[in-house]
Image 1 (cartoon, helix red, strand yellow):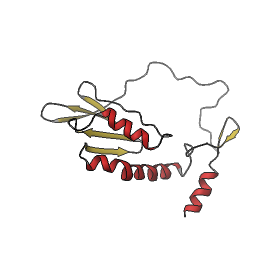
Image 2 (cartoon, rainbow, N blue to C red):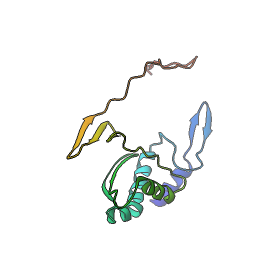
Image 3 (cartoon, rainbow, N blue to C red):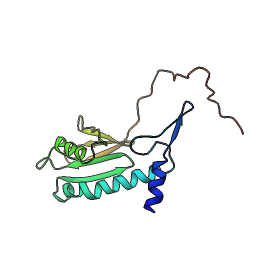
Length: 147
């Protein structure tokens, strides 16, 4: 099974503008195997590296969905900068970008999580609508065609 995965990852090509590329690292987006490889990788990262932080009770809540992670930490024992620094040292080719709480709230997926003095309130988050019309490159056909 591992040999099959290695061969698949070594022939991980994609095309863009009539050119064929092979990523130097990782799996190309859109590859049928990319979701599975990413999930295996993140599960291993969680089990081998985050477990020690969770066991030390520095992180009181952890939730992950695909590539979005929500952490609630004990500020008596750690800081977001320490957690961020630790997680980014694990795999130098993979760097996490944190979003910190602002005005007692943070966005996680389509949720707005609001910290109040005695409770947590959860609301639906809606992204602001853009007023800029999308740019369509010339000579591109954007209408679906029947085959």
